[in-house]
Length: 174
Ligand code: AMP
Image (cartoon, rainbow, N blue to C red; front, top):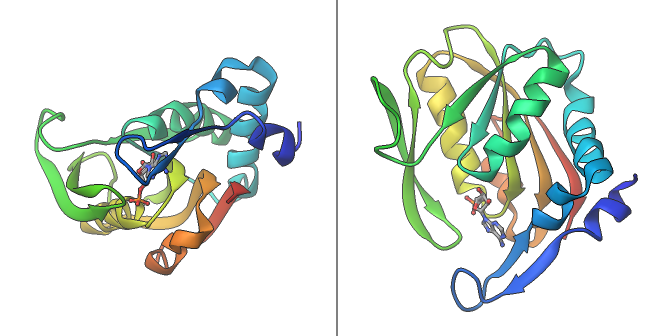
């Protein structure tokens, strides 16, 4: 399945979660076995020879893709979550979201010093969330080798916030 076939399985939901936002719903793609497999392979492919130790999934749809990508790459997976969800000691970084502002956290031993990290989420919008995830990795002493997203909303220019995130990869663009 090519990127255009995958893109046909993204459903636009206008005015969700608030007016003016067109929410990109990945559920139809997740429900289609061949599309799900193709999306995971497409997100992992450019990073096969990058020596990735950890694939970080950003809550919550990033988790869905980070686990199978980690298996594809022979890497471990780590959780980046909203505040107060993770037990144990955490690093925390605040950021601006397309709709509102928030913070994200990661356990202090999810990434060990020197580890090579791939950041994964379903969608890059303003880039605030992914940039905060990059900062979490830096606080832990890891190296962000790249970031992989199913979808880029290129008109929001999230890429400009990810100058220190290594190789950026998107399966599809709007
Ligand atoms: P941002 O920090 O602005 O790049 O926002 C990225 C995060 O918010 C990702 O975890 C996305 O899942 C979610 N997100 C932002 N905008 C949208 C959208 N239009 N459709 C679906 N998810 C979105």
